[in-house]
Length: 409
Image 1 (cartoon, one colour):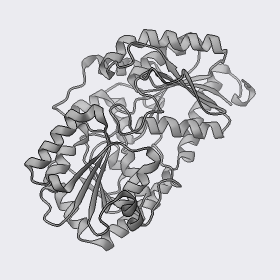
Image 2: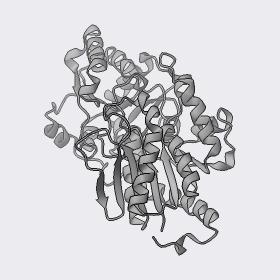
Image 3: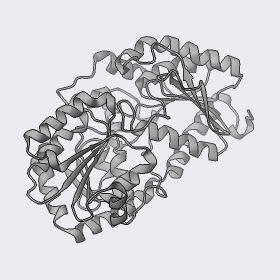
Image 4: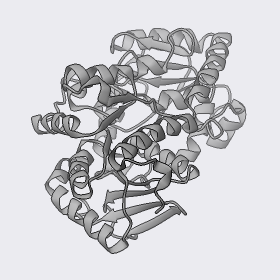
């Protein structure tokens, strides 16, 4: 067994996915920690305190804890968090000294965490694994209206050059790490994200719609994710405006902190004349999302970039066809013409064409949905965790020079 220190500075795995700084990464950390506990590994997830009322330690199960570290104001923005990384590092070290647990490995998530993880690697003399989840260079190349700062990209490059392994979710991201960040290929391991196929499974559409208060007969188009420009919601709204048939568009994500951006999107829906057909729904607990997927005829992922595309995989697991941008990890998650469709450019017209095709053809939707469910079976979290565990075992054995199983906490 291994004692793992997971670092997630800017967002807590306890936060609800779909809100401002919470998304697929939060799901990934929670599910991975659950699977590692089943394999007798312990995991402490260190995150920056963003709520004064949360306890310092939240026990998830007998082998998993989430530890809140005081570092800067609780309401500090994501952009400001890097100023408090030294304070965060000291908080982690202070907790470890008081608690007495010796860690075998550090697993960081996102570049801010990687900066801390590199210093913990040196302090504890343990291997350091990072998963960036998204890369600044990738965002800049795919969404020109929002630029990631040079300090982030330089930080990612320095971290990627110093860690023992980089885990990434797609071959496309691996290529970017090699060619744009200069990471040696042998230090990169591709492990896709996963999905809980017991929770995310096909359900009766009529029942799902009744439980959500939706019209049973009205076609439903679904978007799930954060309310941010990179997600391409404006493209989806413009595509929906081209549909002549009856439909209901559900945009599920965000909360009160996203009121300005949501207001802009609502204004756009009014301008396009479809406001009466669009419902904006606050982010819901992850365990409630299967109802929304199963209520939908089609799930749309119009992102300008996705390192993997967890929403697409969750929809596929529920037997719902996906229309997605042909970018990043979506090119590997969605099988074009088999589990859904990949749109080769981000204008609204090709999205509208695919939506018209799917909403008018129930046998096609059912066929794509069945194939999507079958494809999702290959992405179970148990399989993902087994591959990540192999990385842990290899590195810990190298550092300690003994079989991993010989260590007992």
